[in-house]
Amino acid sequence: MTTTLASTPRPLERPRRLRTSAAMRRLVAEHRTHPADLVLPMFVREGLAEPAPLGSMPGVVQHTMDSLRRAATEAAEAGVGGLMLFGVPAERDAVGSAASEPDGILNAGLRALVEEVGDAVVVMSDLCLDEFTDHGHCGVLDGEGRVDNDATLVRYQEMALAQAATGAHMLGLSGMMDGQVAAVREVLERDGYTDTSVLAYSAKYASAFYGPFRDAVDSQLRGDRKTYQMDPANGREGLREATLDLAEGADVVMVKPALSYLDVLAEVAELSPVPVAAYQVSGEYAMIEAAAANGWIERRRAIEESVLSIQRAGADFVLTYWATELAGWLR
Image 1 (cartoon, rainbow, N blue to C red):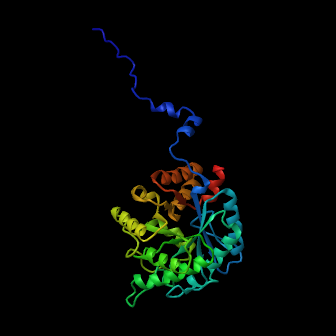
Image 2: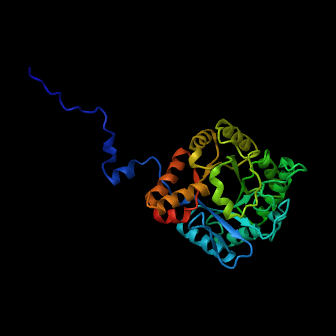
Image 3: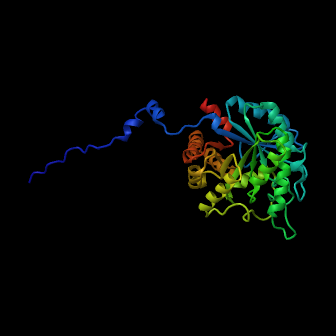
């Protein structure tokens, strides 16, 4: 019996044609990262004589005021789009008094950044109480130790005015209090800070990936933040939070963390008429650095791919601790 061999299969479609060379792949790329898409989170700590490296975040430091200025200049020269500043005070109290002091470490740091980089980079401020309270929560506590949402809004308004007075361009509302965007927008408009933008941390989850950040700000947290940060099980709730913030006047909405919430990010980006940001948080940074240090992954490729995935999901800009380094590679 004679067996006739089938003819060689010929695909009807050949997508590989668009992958044949680096030039071809560049030409047809659907997304690409630009330095201006990146925001560098920075930490400035009161009382430091020299920068303090963070063991859980290799390559990241708590800055002195001088090193903060130098790092800001380096980021600006690399083309980074923004700087997000967190302050670590020497003293804390129950209501986070240092957060709204005009000469407190965060507000002094913001003025230094504005002086150093001017309008070349968007200077962003963290507007939250957790770094400044002796209990580590993002708000004021009531008599039973619970975060008092409405009393906290008053403190946020005080912080907003102090930060706007420094010349900060964008205030990052990260506390996840109900009504925080409306409360801050109200006092900014009332006091004439009509050009100061509001970045709402709209879908901020109670995540395990914040661990190294708590080292960075010397967190005093007792307990957890599950009564105000979102449950990781909930996606639709993230859309609800973003919708509320948009209605209250947010100029930008954000999803945090990024990599484990790309589905939420994509859905928020689909509905949002304003820019959408995402925060590649400390734990995401630490995992890649640790794996690369052990030779398990290619560091540069993993960094580039992780940031690109966040943009592909819909982020218009990304907060990442690799911002300056990545911007240097891209230029």
